[in-house]
Image (tube, rainbow, N blue to C red):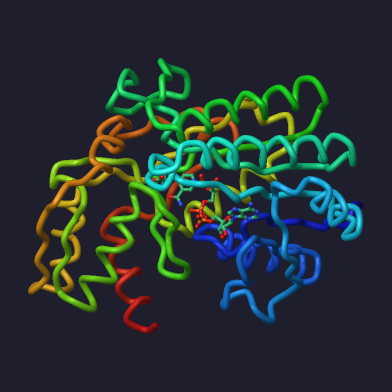
Length: 315
Ligand code: NAD
Ligand code: SER
């Protein structure tokens, strides 16, 4: 049996912290190496090894992969949609070159499995708005979406041509209480809980009727691990899987919060992120993920709201 040695790149980010902790529970603390450009996240400190890695520095990355006897890589380092629109060149450069560096090293070192997330941002204004299917018209209008769509095809290429077992999920907007989100359009759905508890009011940068696909972090972590643990024969999609959990608008999340904090008030000041949100589907069809590897979400808006508020209060 292979002793897994897992490298998580971008481990100090919103997903990276929780994914690293979850992988450490499964594979053992010392077998999951957290890495990031920025300093180690406080929640990771003392839970396992941490190395400083810039995914753009291919040589340094390659040395670490060999030195640490890595068998699987989870690549989470990226620039997200809102930050990407402010600096399109940087977003394209990091999101593409970072992925190509990892795929090349995986091919050369015969890395057993690679995980790389895509996003609902691959879909654009011409994709279906409701229950957007796995395969449909895909014409992204943000640099982030373009980089994710190109990345999906690089993953497919490395699988078909070099047999690198790369697996991917098109995450919806992710909501979590442990680590802060990093520059996405769906970040309002995290900020709103913090502000509801601290200020009892929130000014939202999206319109009240902006529906977007969303998912609570425990579901996202479980989806990621279930996909990575699925038998190879079950993986029919080598670009990236649609997964879905819930869809809501700022007005609806605000109503859910009011059930617990009746004095909470929301106001709206849409900014440049509105047009990004408007270009994405409102809900996602994930039938293929359900059929291939048994995907099922656990959290809806109300269950998530209860859990978020309880955990944030404790913090
Ligand atoms: P994040 O911004 O919170 O974390 C990314 C991490 O990557 C940061 O800690 C950052 O310091 C690190 N990083 C940046 N440049 C680096 C470099 N050159 N070398 C090494 N590390 C570097 O992002 P996240 O929300 O955790 O997203 C992780 C992945 O999931 C990304 O690919 C993102 O596109 C995807 N995704 C996230 C969401 C979401 O809602 N969070 C939704 C869809 C897809
Ligand atoms: N949550 C991400 C963003 O808003 C979607 O990939 O950028």
